[in-house]
Image (cartoon, rainbow, N blue to C red):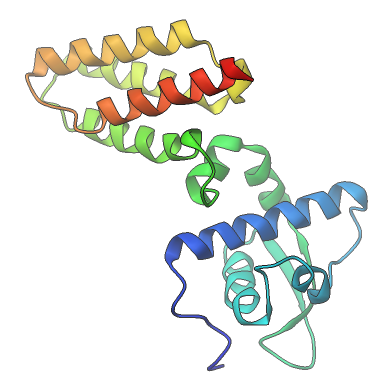
Length: 196
């Protein structure tokens, strides 16, 4: 199998390729749910080529996001289609962006990773009891809000939740390193939406 995996590619490039594969298969599924897509369809869409499609398609199959029909020349597949799990992932914008962020996709593409890091940092704040439950509840509420499409975000609610998280942080007298980065990314995304 040597030669089919491009080691020089960055992890972000592979994630972006996997995203492209899933988006293409999702579109194909919506047009014809029974159709299996042949490799040539992918090769017509640069940067997908024989060198990088094989390992990424096998990864997606291992994750049960696609199903592959193997041909006579493994590891190359002869056809592939998206699974129900793959469709669910593509349709869950937040989870899709978190798992397979678009390459150079704008300010809102870094928000899922920043938010997950914020939730982790909140979990480690030295708070107990009700304060701890409220903080984690507010962080999860923020995640639910940001899972909505960008045009449906409620900026006032987002600001309130960020202020409440900041108050909890101040009460714990412990920094949340990612909070300002997340706030800036959210402000940029909200402003870009307002400018459209």
